[in-house]
Image (cartoon, rainbow, N blue to C red; front, side, top):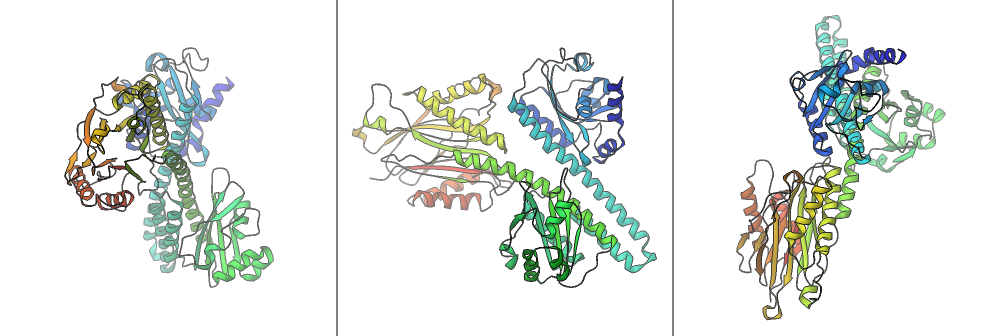
Length: 619
């Protein structure tokens, strides 16, 4: 009875229900939440995935994949059918291998009615730390969830929770608009107070709009600077963020911060700075002049004040879930009094800024780790006599994207008993694009490269199609989940009687066609291909194609980031790439690849680009 009373209390907690209402989500489809459900279904390979929000008397599914009728239409169930309510009451993940045997779930009507057998649910944390529901993966048969699967589900739940908190901020923005309308209605009370209230309300509206989608820390600081300069007119605007729980790092804009740019860029949270006090004590700190600064803070802070020419300043902590994330700093070169209204505005602005900082840090940490891993996997090219090679990798211009584009080149093992000089110069080259723009895509890319290398080693003397087939068999039977496109090729020099000629054998799994420039400058698309790599399509028969490459031939393998971008015909872009190759085919390959990427993809590519060029020197 006590457990039931605790469960009811958690379901009906006023703070939790208010935070749930702030999201604006209920028993209706939401495009953003449906995307999270699709991600869970695709990444974990489950038939059912839900973004489940638990109300006081029901659970609703704004995000849903795979649920049967009538639940799919109504997007809700009573709490009697909810395993997600255990996540809410327990405030921790719930992982069940077989719900029919687990004491917590075996009596739930969800087992027979919704066919819930295996269940993994991660808490969705909203404003004020309330657990609003769960992001859950459901299987219709018993399943042992791996640590990797649960880690991915937890990461997706963290991102989904951040989106829910952002929805709450957006609704608060609408409330700010309502406050603006109320301020307009009371304009006759006082013209000066009206203008001040309107200015502050518009500042917060602009802040909600400007900071809602920022995912880069430098952009957060730039947006805050632009917001406050016109309304509060400070001489200096700064932003410091907490790192490793011990340090504060000042966000610096190159060529815009003057002498302060390299003065105490990082310092300990225990140091005698106003910002450190604001973070450490979680309160707004005012500095009223140099005398106040000299009395309460250290010489470094006094020096910074003098360099900036400030007379007064305020440091406002950026609220985090557990502790402040940093501090917002505004300084004036004249006396400035902060009244109650302005203090409230700064506190609200710090709240918007904190959410933007939290989101940017999450994105930057994930993307940095993925890009470091991705670039570490792109190995150096081997030195092969009689062949020139160069590669180029350019990440997408967007800072929040990381992809699965890759290239590879390595010597092929000689067939047993056939180690001729030509065999020792045989080479495997590959290029591919794994589906997705996240850490998983980058990690799968590394596995594909390793599996293709292993397949070539294990099947020495066979063609590239055999290696791709072996990789796909592993992909299917071990349920690795790789999907995407690739070209895998073998290059072998011809016998001495055909000196200088190489034979190219390749197989294409749904990838953009390689481009071959003949010695006379003619461009050929090697456009014969099979279907793409997809584990759900079973084993495919990979066909091989051959072409003899005389001296002076130039071969380009590339990913679709080179030729595919919004508003541009892909065939036209591929033709342009061929013309650029032909026009500059005699240039050094690294310069040629730079020229190709600049002219075809432009300076800000929307997707990652990987290029691999091979040239057989002219006699």
